Image 1 (cartoon, chains in turn red, purple):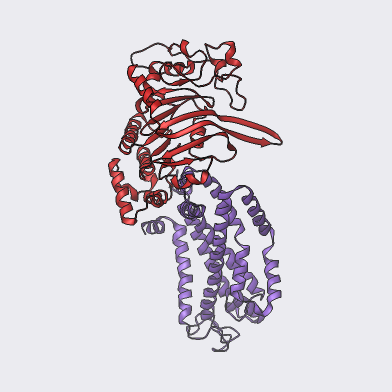
Image 2 (cartoon, rainbow over the protein chains, first blue to last red):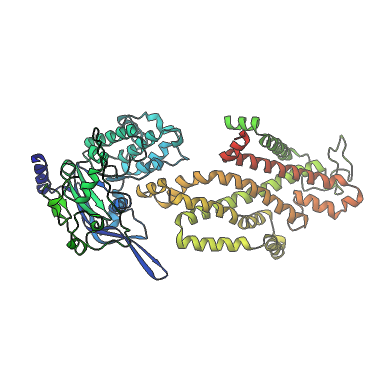
Length: 343
Length: 284
């Protein structure tokens, strides 16, 4: 508890935020035959990520996780649009306002900001050798001549426990785990300050997953980089992240130091999420939450969780709860935050 | 190299196609060692049947059929290759750009594409021949044919490019800051290359057929020996009626050999590219 508080304090005084997101709203806007539909996949999200920190984003499927980080990376395409808010990166004094001045972002990509995409085992072009992918993606950003570039790439692969000969291979000649590691090597070879990882371990079995997680953690620690790590797998979050944000239906429900969040969830949704995790030796039947996540095109009024929330009161359906500092040093968006008991 | 040997060993179509095309290529090579000028007439005794001296006989114009055939094959093949190459460049460029950019650009390009596709080829070429008359030369004809022969293949390439557009490696390439041209050239072109190989063969067959058609009708430079041109002259001298059958049968037989050879190659290349038909061969 004490450690958690001290960490929270550090958050408050250190102004060194690599990423600052304020009031970000990004909707999928469709217009068919004059009928306008909005899918509010990212709705009023504010968060900060500090230097040398692994920031986790958790939530069930279709809660807006991928939409959020695509928006952060400036990688959105119509029909998705940023309606309001700002995303600002700060790379060693060079600040970039992703939606205020988008042209600043382009040269920074891959050099400072890299992205391990969902289904990232498939980012290698199936008809080209791995070395061509390295050349295509990273060569321009490194500013090194041919030989120096390749020795750097080989060195980097070796450090990640890969045989540099994989450069000569086609992707289909490699196993899923190797491709995943190559993808991570590809995303980190320029030593970026900020890495966005979208479910990088989801398609892997647990052993390879552990391996890959260790790898990411290693790379991050050596480069002092910041990572936004997205997955629905809470055990992965427990293993790798420093701070964790829980998303529900396009909004943040709770954010805090990972350990504190697991020990002492403040939001009823977080409590149920953590309560549903199996533990060795515990044979109790896990309670499931009735209902299903709301459609983001027509979300419930007030707190979006209230139709499923066991603690819901009348106020919850009228007012949207704002993110408030919580008792454990994080932030939580719930009117009854203090009354939550871990299930 | 190993692939080629394997194909020759296990794929009968490929073997047959290779043999047939080798015959044609040997003929083309021979044309460079012709004892007579290919345009000269009355250099040998006319109307001689095939014999030890004149392997495939001589024509009523006093030319040896064998050397005429060699030159004709070279010119016809050259025509076909030029048409195929030019139309490939257009088809690849249009297909990749249209498929990758999508949206409004795609709609406009495909509208033009389909309009051109709907135009009948032969009447346009005949019109061109009548307009140009004496200025008509084979390069002009080749370029015109190329401009008429790419629409179908560009649609094929576009359909693949449309699916590549949303693949992870494309999104990654965009994110890493590669320019559109680089993405098309370096990431997408290798992907559509098998289709390009396959359609090139078909396009070659189509172009040669077009050349033969136009030449038989006399709508090309008739003095320059081509397969169709030979048949044109044979007809002009009523070769069949006069009993000079070798003049008309030989070019026909060799153009059939050429078509069969190309078709077999196209088929076996398709099999090499498409794993499903390879599985079918293995009995799966």
